[in-house]
Image (cartoon, rainbow, N blue to C red):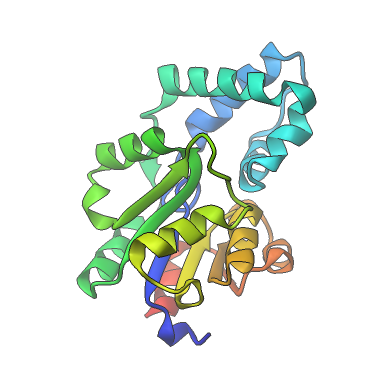
Length: 212
């Protein structure tokens, strides 16, 4: 698919549109401590997050469900609103809105958490669809959430572009048949392209120039 022929933009949330890693890192460190596991560096937690739901299994094994519940409780009660827009995010959103480009957020964050954070930033009006984690809904790198977003936007997945900073984002895009832009915040260009990224950039500003 030519970059000039896409009809919708799908966007990851954490690490792509929003710097939500302060709350994620703090909650994860507390979760690791509670489950008697070694502390991780900030970068290791970023990479863990970018690998998607399967990474929780690798860390916590049979305790994954209990660890996930603990993490969410700590995250939501203490850190939920400790977020900032990523550089270039509002410029990209304004541009897409100006040209009437349909947009969706596709995140592995819980649905109501994603909606609450987007509402706090005043960004809900930008999006035609928000696909977050719900019971019974697969998470990236499974393509299901991207396919749900495309259905909401009434666009063929082959006509959508996914922008994300994690391996799970570009893997899900490749499996859904979407074009994908990888942001090299936590993973290298080589890692993201190996996982299925069509092109890679260092920032949303660079990605926007490509989209234009």
